[in-house]
Length: 457
Image (cartoon, rainbow, N blue to C red):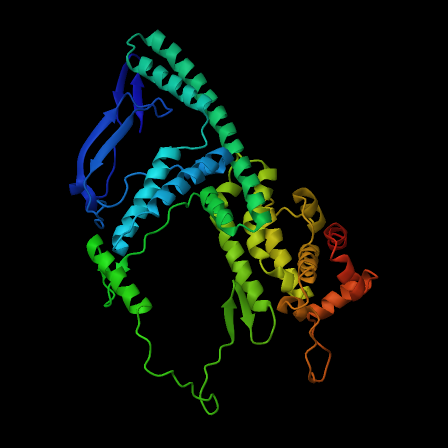
C-alpha cells in the first residue's frame, strides 16, 4: 500500500493484486480508514469466495472449550474434584438400561461440572500481551481516529507525531511482554524436562515454533475412502470396535507350529520405546535417529533463534530443554566411543554457533564456544546421565530384571582380535579411574545425597 501526497491533497492509491486464476473469486474491495494498522497507510480488505474443502457437522459438538488452565490453581482444582465427586455419587444411584444412556449421563455430568467451576475459555489473539499493552494499543487506535477526522493540516501533523510516539511505546511494551512470556515458557519447559513430562515439553515446543495446530485425520471406510458425514463416522467406529473387541472365542485353542524348518522374518533393526535396536548391538543407528529428530526440533524453532526480542540466555535454555533433551534421549545406555561423541558434539556445536550468530568466515574455538554458551562437552554430559541412571537402577530390588542386567555376564567365546568397546567396559574403566569398586558403588547408591556427589564428580 502506498499513499501519494501533494501539499494539501492526498491521493490514496492502495490496491490488492490477485492472480488471474482467482479473479472470479474476488467479490469486493474496500479501504478501512478507521483500522489501526500502525502505519500512515490505510488498511485494504478484500472479500474472496472460495470452495470449502470439507463440511463437518458440528451439531453434537460444543461450540466452546473449557478453561482447563484454572486447574493449575490448587484451590480451583480441589473445588473441581469436590464438585465432580458429588455429581458422580448422585449418578451412581441411577439404573441405566443401555450403555448409550449411561454415557450420556456421564457426559452431562462432566460438562455441567466444567461449566460451573472452570467456565468457558475465551479466545485471545495474543495471550502474551499484557493489559498495559492493550491500553496503549487502544490509545494508539484513538489517535488514528483523530487523524482521520481532522481536516487542518497543522493539527494533523501534530497528531501524527503523537501517533508515532504511541506506536513506539506499543512496540517497546509488547516486546517486553513477549520476553516475559518466553521466559515463563522456558522455566516451565525446564521443569517438565526435569520431571520427564515429555507431553508438556512437546506442547511448549509447538507453542514456541508457532505450530500449535493439529492436522485432522479423516475417518475412512474399508475401501479407503474418506467419510465426511458424522453419523456414518460413528457407524464406522462402532463397526470397527465390534469387529476388534467382540470377536467370538475360537472353538479350539490354536496350535502353534514348531519354528524349526519355518522361514522366520529377520530384520536388521527395529524401534523399541523410541530407541533403535540394531542386530550388531551398536548404537550408531540410534544416534543417527536421535540426531535427525533433534535437527527437526531445532529447525522448527528457527523463529526463536532468529528473534531479536529474546536474550541469548533464554535461547540457550530453550535449546537445552527442547533440542538437547531430544538428542540425548536414552543416552544412559549408549556405549561412548570417540566416533560417536564426535558426531554428537559436531551437531551441538553447529547449533550453538547458529544461536550465537557465529557465521562463516568467523572462527571460534570449541572451548570459547562452550564458555559463551555455558555448555560442557557431550561426553561429560552423557557420563553424568549414565551414572544417575546407574544409581537409580542399583536402588531397585535384587529381583528386578534391570538390576540383574547390570551384573549379568554372558557366556561364550568372542572372535579373535581386540575386543570392541562396550557399555560395560566403559563403565568399568570409569570405576577404576574414580578409585572405586563395584561393592562400594552399590553401597553408595542407597544414599541419594552421597550418590549425587558420585554422579556429578
